Structure formats: structure tokens, C-alpha cells
Amino acid sequence: MVFERLNYSSTNMDRHLLSELERFLGKDAVLSRPEDLLLYEYDGSVEIARPQCIVFPRAAGDVVRIVGLANRYKTPIVGRGAGTGLSGGALAREGGIIVSFARMNQILEIDAENQRAVVQPGVVNSDLNAAAASAGLHFAPDPSSQKACTIGGNVSENAGGPHTLAYGVTTNHILGLEMVMPTGELVRIGGKAVDAPGYDLCGLFVGSEGTLALVTEITVRLTRLPEAVKTLLAIYDRVDGATETVVEITGRGITPAACEMLDGWTLRAVEAWVHAGFPLDSAAVLLIEVDGLREAVEQHAKEISEVCKTHGAREVRVARDAAERDLLWKGRKNAFGAVGRLSPTYYVQDGVIPRTKLPQTLKEIDRIGKENGFEIGNIFHAGDGNLHPIILFDARDPKQFERAVSTADAIIRFCIEMGGAITGEHGVGMEKDRLMPLLFTEADLALMRRVRDAFNPAGLLNPGKIFPTGKGCGEVRIRPMPQRGEGNSAPATGRDFA
Image 1 (cartoon, helix red, strand yellow):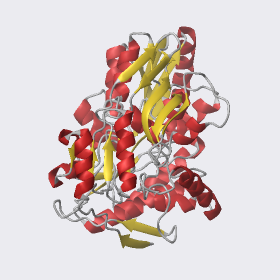
Image 2 (cartoon, rainbow, N blue to C red):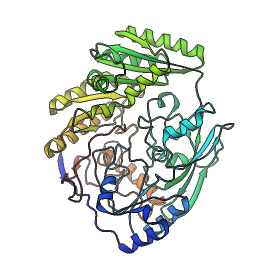
Image 3 (cartoon, helix red, strand yellow):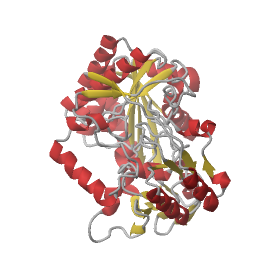
Image 4 (cartoon, rainbow, N blue to C red):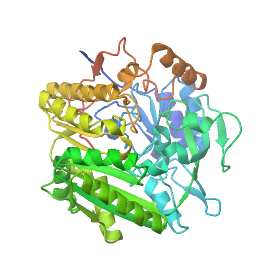
């Protein structure tokens, strides 16, 4: 394995370009001071890349003009929501302009009768849910960072979450997009209709990680809130018992709304901070939720409880009320923040495997961690085999950083051996581009590049993402880690965004 240090450095931006941006956006909507750039050189990953300026459009017309100027000055453009991503997707790998959609944050319409909403890309996921709740509706995809992440970012990464086991990921809930193409053209695809004739262009753009267009408006499908909900906490003295339970639940044809797993180390870290009621002496817990019609929910909860006990659950608790349910989910969704209290840095991975491979994969993750001298916690979407191993390390030690990346790659390679993939929901970004050849042939990658180039011919929109830039898939490229204030700064600590 070859470690090559990459330098993601920024140079001073053309003053004429800055002046033109300030002229039509206003000086309060253009940031270029070094101390401002520091805030936008990272996301929730361990990657770092500094932009040359950040702009804050308020309308699609602003974005059109920004793209036009970027083309004239041949400057890269990167769209950014809340910066909660975990693959470096919203970082300016080659410098240039970050287009922050923080000020395009209006819910433009909630059409309760047709179960639709129209929003700007900067709308926070949980804010849309709060606005739709009075009509008995919700936006089903619920990333664990939903109190911070934006709908635009969800679209870019095709975000998942605990409840996508039953409801599907973001792409299953997007019906229409308004976008500014890299050429500066404003286009609309899809709309409120259930399906549109012709190519599924929404399906192409959702999950394209900001490499094909900048999204300025989104039409989403809203879903009825379920009549009944039951949340179960199954407690195990053996990790294998928990993973075997997941396999049998799905094997019986039961699809919970969510099925999450925390191993003993992780749940103890969570409990020390959140006090969600997780038992400190257990090896693992499953947090399982079923929803729907009341009779079906009761039946499925009973069947799931039986399966849990068959595989060694010493106890299956059912949340007594909404408050207890919310507390359990608070524990799950704040887990990464809890881990951040125990280590100066951590690296969250995002492999995905078939559910039937969970037992052996968790054993291999434990082995890889011990071999490399790292504590690795596990918290993940067990129902769809989407793993999130958490590697604790100290990024101030360059050797530890290299070992952490090498450890993460070993885990991902094993996921592929198990029939899985390199990412389940966090995206490829600049974190896993080098691993793409493990899944795709050169012909596959060439075809994908041709699609990107058809929409993004000049390559100015989010360059250096998704596709490998090296000569071989065996290379692992590690950026340098200068101290803050030396151009690029030290790795950011892990954040509660997975």
C-alpha cells in the first residue's frame, strides 16, 4: 500500500472576481478573509480543503450569475448545505468558490392534499418535518443529522437514515428539481406528478454529489404519519445474538420501519452522555421500530420480540410513551457526539454489506481494529446492512492518521469481499474516490465520466470528487496535516453527522 501526501492548498482569488461577486450579492454575502475560510475548509469527515471565497445567494438568479462569473474566470464552484457530510463532498478540493445555500432556506409550499412540498435547498430536514406535522405528514428520510442537515445536501448525497429501511432513501421522495447547470442555464425537471415520461433525470441528479448541477428548488413527496408506532429495545449479552436476530427478522418477511444496532462499547459511551436508558452491562442492543396500522404494529412487535428472545435477548423493552421513544432515538442520533467526548478524533466509515454477512463482518472489524491497535465502536443501520465503524485515533500524530485510514480501507475491502459496497449513504466525495476501482472497471468509470462531462464539460463544478485521480486502486492518498493557519489545517474531529 502506497501512502502519498496530497496538498489541498488555496491561492489568492482574483480581486476582479471578488469585486464582481460583492457588487451584485453585497459585501455581507461574500467571505474571503482567512479567518472566515477556516470555517468552511472541513465537513464531518477527516478531509480538509480550503476554498478561496464563500458566497451566499438568496435566489436562483443569484446562483445563475455566480456560475456565469465562475465560468468567465475559470474558477471551480462547490455547492454546500450545512457541511454535515462525511465524505468531503462539500469541500473545495481545488479551491475556488463555495456556494452556501444557508440563506435559501424557505419552505415555499406545503400541498397537504397532494402530499407534496416545495422547498429551497437550505431548508433543514427537521424543519420541513415540523412544518408538515400539523397536516399529519412528514418527509420520511431522516438522516441522524436531521436537526442540522439540509434538503439540498440530502439530495446531493442521496442521504439515508434509520427509517429508510422501510421508507427508502432520499431519491424515493424527490419528484422535481430546479437547477443551475454548470453552463449557467436554469432548468426544471420533474414536478408534482407521480411520474414523468422520458428519462428519470431526477434519479440521475439525486446522489450525483454536486458534480452535475447546483440545485435551487426541490419538490418532495410527503408521507402520512403512521397511525401507530412501537419502539423496542432488545438487550443482548452476545453480539452474535443481535446480528442473528436481524437476519431472521428480515428472513421472516417482516420489514421494521427501523432496525439499529449499537455494540456494548458504543452504547456505554452514549449512555454516559445522553442517559437514554441503555444497559451498561450488555454486549449489544437493537433499537427496532415498527409503524403502520395499529393491528399490524401490535402483531409485528409481538413477532419481533419472539425472534429477539429466540436469539438470546435477555430482555425486550417496549417504549411506554412518546417521551421514552424520543429518548431512545436521542441516544441513537446523538451517538457520534457522545463518542467525540472520548477521543480527540474519530473516523466514521460507511460500508454496506448483505444483512446475512453481519456476524462475520463485525468479527472481522474487531480483528482489524486489534491488529492495528485501534478501539473501534459499531453503531449502524443493521436492517439494511449499512455499517458505521468508528475508529478512534489522535490526528495530531501523522502515523496514527495513516494507520486509521489504512484500517478504514481494510474494513471497506472486506465489505466488498462480502458482496457489499464502499458506501451506503455518505457518498464517495474525496474520501473514497481512490476505492472506486475496487467496484468498477475502467470501462464503467469511463462511462460515468462521460455522463458527468456531458453536463459539466468544463469540469468546474465540484472537481476532484467521486472519480479516482491516482494511477491505481492500490494507492492510498493522505493529505498533509499542517497546523491551523498554515494554509490547510489539522484534521477535524469526528462530528455527529452520520
